[in-house]
Length: 524
Image (cartoon, rainbow, N blue to C red; front, side):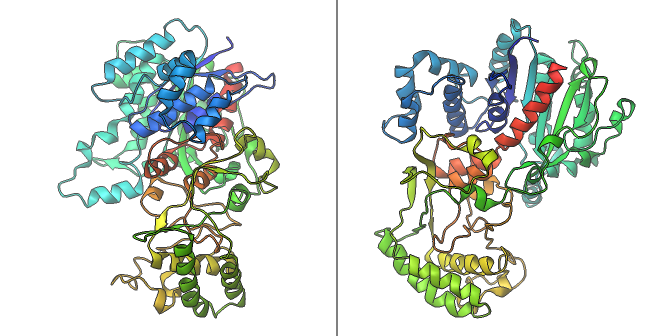
């Protein structure tokens, strides 16, 4: 096997899956996976992807101080303007990796994308893999519920159901040794014209050329699960659809993220002896909880919507009004009231809303589990990026304070709508119907977090910080920590776009575990 394994990353988003593979290092200190092409259509995610591709030019070498300078916002210019001048060769390589700009599979960009991929693999005699997953909006439970509300919606006419065929076309072109395909759990129950989408995808992935009626050689693949015991070679086709689900929290990821991830291995490359669970080395009985991965981030306060000046004094005054409303409502628990009092007393400490870069006043202590410190932290950064609390309506922050005090006293359990005192109830006529029973959810300190989704960009109510004294929703950096992005991974775009990128990504640390499995198979 040559040293370099070329990777084609499809529907890449901000690069979570690619990050896990490219960051994989052998015991000898080598980085065998080289991303040859990343395909992403969304502009802000593409900017993030290109910046990270630039960072990867220095893997195994010292990252230049200019990279951290840019992250801190010192140059008031774009990454393109800053790096193309100072590091023309590295920036050109990064742009080539991300195809020079946003590109969409299944669009008029088809020929350009396929030409670029073909050029990358033309002279490569070593191993090659394809990774990625088609967009999930048509498969997710939320997306399907939304589609039902669209007048005249017909699933068979929704092209998103069939974007996996673009993945098939790339498999047919590249004919990789291995591929990894990811999607939401909802794909297991998605149907078009009564036919299971996932079952059809599995059948087509076995031989992409045959499924596409292509003229290329018919390469056949064995489809294996990562988190289910492997079966006898002769029974591989008998896996149930649910066997391909990975529960991320079982493998050291601090969130309850359940995803379908397929491993496709060329049948002629399948080892004779292959048994057990592929990810068993990372299975753990003690899940990593939220507090362990965000407790050492700088404390922040939220801002106030439609308030001028939107400063600490305005926030503190609102916090005091919230305390007066909340304290009596927490009379059911001395512990809950103590939480409120402690938060009220700490409100004298001036907090900022954070920003693009928040300096670390002192070296963070403890909290991060030993096995994760090297994954997250970068001593050269001397602070935290994308760590900015957003604005909220004043009365919503009253509910945040109540909810966080309540949860801290109830072992992390968030209050339901019936648990709120009347003076904190929103002015929604449906509040008492049961439809909003868990409208406000605290992400508990001592539990794994809920699944971070793109919806966090629109609504912080489901991602309330557990610390009552901060009284806010989670920042992009906190969401990124939950998703296991390293601290030096910078998200471009507006804050809303950053949230979407983080929510749509594959956890890089989980991808890193998968990369080790793939590398082991290729070595064999």
